[in-house]
Amino acid sequence: HIATSLPLPSERDHLRPRIDLIVFMIDIKSKYSLKNVETSLAHVDASFFLGKVCFLVTGVGRVNACSIDTNAVCKLGETYCSPVLFCELELEGVRAATAQRLVRMLQISAGHIPGVSALSFVSLMRKSNDD
Amino acid sequence: ESADAQKTAFLLRKAWTLYSVTPLYGFRRARLRDYARLLSAFIAAERQRGLAVEVGVELDIKVALSSLADLRGSQLDQAALLVQLSSRSRASSRNSEDKLVWSGWFCSVFGDDLSENVPEHFTCLPLFLTHGAESYTSLVGSWFQKTFDCCFRRLAISPLNLSWMVAMWAGCKLDRPASAVELVFSVPRLSQPLDISYAIHPEDAQALWDTVQKTPGEITQEEVDVFMDCLYAHFHRHFKIHLSAAKLVKVSTAVAAAHCDGIVKIEHSQYLPGVLMLLTELAISQIQ
Image 1 (cartoon, one colour):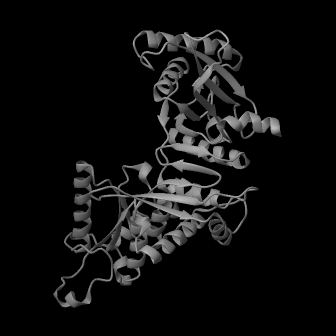
Image 2 (image 1 turned 180 degrees about the vertical axis):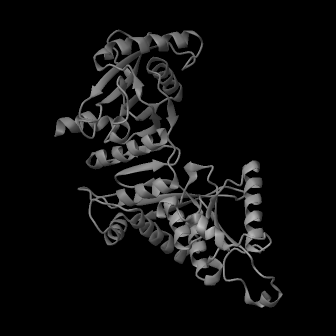
Image 3 (image 1 turned 90 degrees about the vertical axis):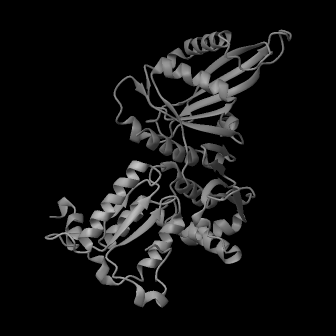
């Protein structure tokens, strides 16, 4: 399901299936997309931040068109305990690899992989020098 | 002080195309005259080979290389190096004046990040600025690349860096009346390209920056973000367009103007070191 911002319209709440993973897309060329994501985050229930949220930064192939400070995005990931993935959708290989990663994460978040829960994402994010 | 102003007057109010240059190997200040002769011979040879710069015009190109000792940040920087190409038409009389057809200069202003890590025999002058025909730029560039084993790359300026520039320069207090602060945005993904030009009264821009900046002399990313967000919000209130979704391509202030393709125009000598320091930093980050 794709939405341009949150919250989702309430009219379709009863028809909506369970949401297993929210991927927030940030276009590195658009400051507006970052602002949009920041305001949408406020509408997400806290329980999602236990491994069911991830940030996807697109357009990273073009460093010269960058309108966003990448440190700010990484900080966002840290604040919300969610992984930040960087990709370039215009490159077919990267696009396919990113899609595979997201599907894998979705399988884990939906509980389809026995023995691995969405909570593992949070522990994977902890940097080694924190221990 | 006016002697300094005279020396640097040549670089004001001209559109300079920016390049980053890797350190020069085996460059020696004492040999400037020799280098000028070698470059001159190289240019003449290339033109003989048919790489004609101007068709049908008989021109002798004279090369002059000079050092600009004052154009640097600290004593740790190398002095700037100026290359000038002048022409004298063969047809005209002996006392006709040389006409400057191309200039380029290498400089480093507080470029310690690069120079402190560089081995012996290398000279760091990471920023290269040119004014004049592209064909001359590529001739001069080729000669430097062959002679000093260095590499030139066009220096592009990202929207993020442009917003730093406009925030910094809009806040500068000038001793003469300032011109408007202008931002030009290009709107992507439309069937016909659309450019939006947003002009702000210089005093309003300065007043805004004064309320945003907490420590004079220091600028943080957060302050630049707040400054830009105010400008975007103001525009959105009036026109219902989110400029933050468009691409910032050019900024223009009374201090200097910069374009994302790596073209800069410095209007005022008052903030010259600051502008060059920022450009040096951009050049170094492109090299590393």
